[in-house]
Image 1 (cartoon, one colour):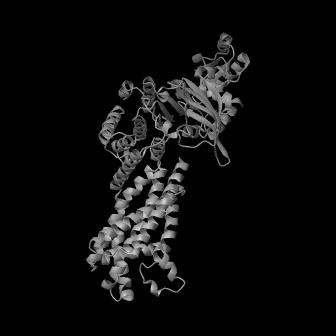
Image 2: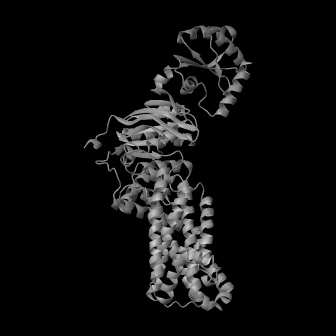
Image 3: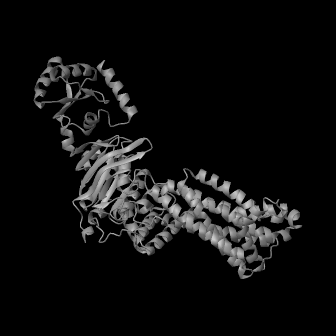
Length: 335
Length: 272
């Protein structure tokens, strides 16, 4: 049976388009996700990430282009695709008014399990996600992290080979976020393919084998985290000065020696500067000693995905308002 | 918390079904009805109208209009009780549409849409469970009627009348389901439904004999499908007679389901 063998590509999307009125939320997205991989779709709010996932998960009908999941067309073979996927939404797709266990029973029954099997499976998954004690409580009394875990547990009842995670850690505290990362890694260890969207650059960096950077409904860059970082330049200099008041002198020294403009981060005394040749750091350090600028920390690193995003799209990954405020800060420092 | 996931590998289904079969569709509909039942049990406020309406409307109409229209409360009851029941369940059927809209606005419907399940199941399941509410309204109104002196002589006809009104309301609820799927908010559904239901139930033979109506209005009231249901109920419950109006009602109900169920499911799939 051809349908039982996983194909090389878990997802093949060609020129996907979805328009809401005048707004082309997704404007020709191409994606290739290899079976067994974690694929990250990275972009700011409103870039078209959720709309793209919705089309791939048969929740929205594309206005243009086509997509296949393990070789099955998402429009013509929607029911087949639905047997291969699990979807965990940005906003937990669980029933608020009923208990966690009842949620699991309903989903299990809908997937063809008997009442007894659905209950057993539900209890097993609730246990695995640390929700056993809350099993009988109505979901509206769950915390945000518990809801997200229940949502993910619900997606795993049939252990689908492809799992969509739409911003799985948005709004979670760092500890819960780390747990979610462990779960995602475990899923991949079990042979699942994972497509996750995120606004967090470090999340994509941590988890994804390949990353598509998406901006205004289009894929603007694609590759491994290292490849994307390579787009920005060789290295990035990070330093922290002991005396925060000398920061202007430090910026001036960098400008003179390296010929590049350093960016001051909000934390006191921290600077980053792009560096074409890591070799030049020697000259820079000598210049600092001559001027009596004392360093608390210095390192040369590959650029972060934040810098990648800035370079590729020409604007910050954060919301428009925030990036405008950041620009103001930079001008003040430069002045 | 991830221990179990590591030990359980992903499962690639042995066989992919392109369509959902009839047996699965039925089973999924029952599961969705089960879900609606849990929700109904958990939200007591949904029972308020169902429990209170039969009392208020029966008392109000019986003592307000009984003397004027039939020369006394008891003489009015055989005409009134069936009318109150029909009006009550038709209004309750509109609530089905508003609740469906509210339900669909929650994230859980995204999950239902992503599951390999029949597209009709979420609608049919919700509509099926709501027949419980229709049954409660019917039973309570009859009880109140009997307490204040209604003595229906229909025997088995009473039970048939109840079944008829519940089946008809279920059919009518497909109209509100379509509205619920299409409308932007639950309030819209409620508003439009009431705009249709109020004239439909009042321009009928519900509360006054049609012979008292002006010439231009009488045919309207007599052709009104609600009048046929009320007449059918009166004949069945009061006299145990299966009249021609029962057939008209059943035909009407079948036509409504045949038109609106596919439209509602199609609208739901469009949203999906």
